[in-house]
Length: 319
Length: 112
Length: 123
Image 1 (cartoon, rainbow over the protein chains, first blue to last red):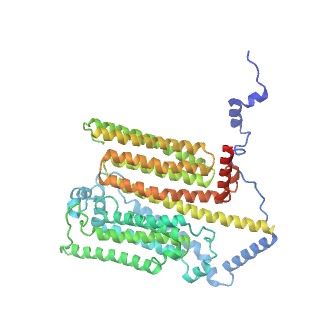
Image 2 (cartoon, helix red, strand yellow; image 1 turned 120 degrees about the horizontal axis):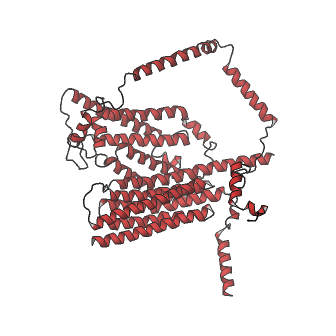
Image 3 (cartoon, chains in turn orange, yellow, brown; image 1 turned 90 degrees about the horizontal axis):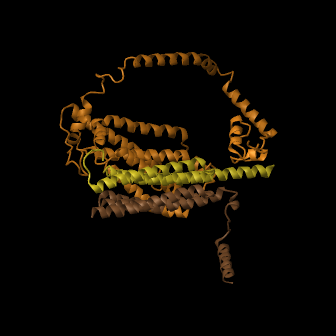
């Protein structure tokens, strides 16, 4: 016969722990998670009065019963919104019902275009990297649309987040960046060594877009990352010596216009069956591939400006 | 590597060495991920993510030799840049947030 | 000749693997974030350079190995800065640091204490 265990011995076995976990009688968070002491949220009378006054003011402004335009708008808004939603739904479903089945043999995607790109890609575009050659010569118009989307995205973010430079200068002591460490000598020294390396590497990726994977988009991203490291090490005031709002506007707009001009030149010569006199060069060299290298440079500038602009707008509110 | 041709002795040794090292590094990567989940403080997690980046860099270098594609080393360099950038920005922002919180608490306790 | 290069390269690679294993062991057993920073920095510098040197020896002298040398150079410059910033973060935001490590206000206090300990051991 086996002996019954005492209470203390039983508490140390695995079976006790298992059944305690099964029944859920011990709180799983006590003694395992670091918890800070909880204090009650207390609201003073002043704060409560201020909150009520603000709420009242906002409600009065929104539901102003003397403004005729607001009353009329409130009445027809819901009806028009419902009609518009139904119309959008119906038109989209109607368009989707015309699409062919997935995987059908005579779909539009399984045609001879893909085979032509792979077989004749290298000799027609002059680029060893078929993907770069495809998106920048065969489908250059699509890439132009993507570059446009980047431009519009920064315009929208600027609309919402950008403040005037005078307001920023007044505010520069009192925004939410005032508590951050301002300058770190170790980071500054290292950034002055590392940032040139990163910039040169980014330019290398840009220039080798037609020989190895890379091209405009990835090169521009690395260039933007280098700029962000520079801004973090040296501060916005030092960066504005060589990259401020004027230079940003000039770079972005001229990059997009250059791409548009190149694209339109190819459109005109191609549609009228004139030969465009852009030499293709020898396959595998740096200066080869026709117009791929200039387009890569243009797209790279665009993407780098976009990345830096997003970072600066979110952190400071201005370039 | 994926073509079934007869390899010399040195090449088979290289192939199996690389595969063994890759499997070992995958286990180490998983262990770093566990530390990133477990670590009670912010610095623990950032350290673990930095380490994961380093291990991935070694794995990419081995793959660049295994598949005989030389351009994968560019990706390795980009990984180094990006992990460095991540540490710089995270520390700066978190120090700012912490200092702001401390000053607010001091003001509150100073009043009360 | 090829075999000799392969054996030498894989020796370096195995040293790198051992260093990574020690690093992971250290990250789990040490108890303060500042101590774990030591083991992470160990892997960042010694581990990756041993692995890369082993791979460079195995491959020969090509463009790929030059890029590996550039990776080692870049990482040896960037990793100590990351460690410095993380240590700064940990010390500034951890109020309870005295329970896990002894802190000194100035480095001259630490030097005085070490001199006293040295004198005591001589006596």
